[in-house]
Image 1 (tube, rainbow, N blue to C red):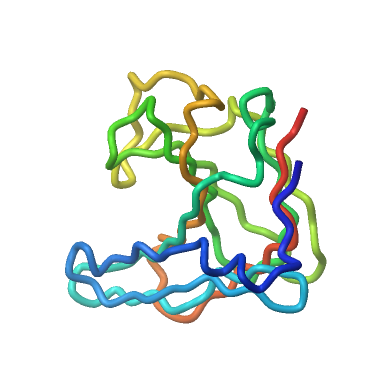
Image 2: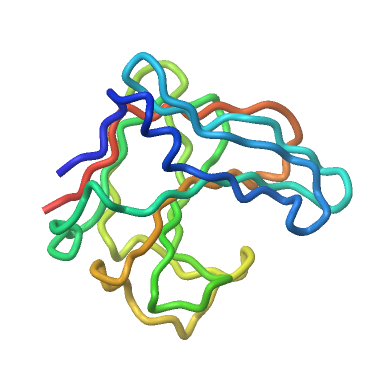
Length: 164
């Protein structure tokens, strides 16, 4: 099952959690147009900031995410490094499983992320004692940019799908 971006109402399911929660002024949004999703905005390093993120509940994958072996993204980048983040009931609220990726700027590509490549983090710090991902415990999927570089960004996403 895949999350595709053929319905503009999809953008209403995503919400931003930017560094304003810690005093920063970065801004992001997730928009849907022309069959793709776009995570875009501007990262600011002012006021101790430096990250922007968007999240959504993983409905649309159900019930198959419980049996999945990972997640694949079809993306086009802008030269910056992003994170795919998964919130799970296996971790506390300030933690997530992440995988970093720097997608091509020239061509759409599909990146495959089996569960074992995700690492548990809390505010950027690796959690060495975290349990492995249990797919049925995932309750949010999202994207984050925190590459310590100020300026505009745009990650284009045409598909998010589970791997079997």
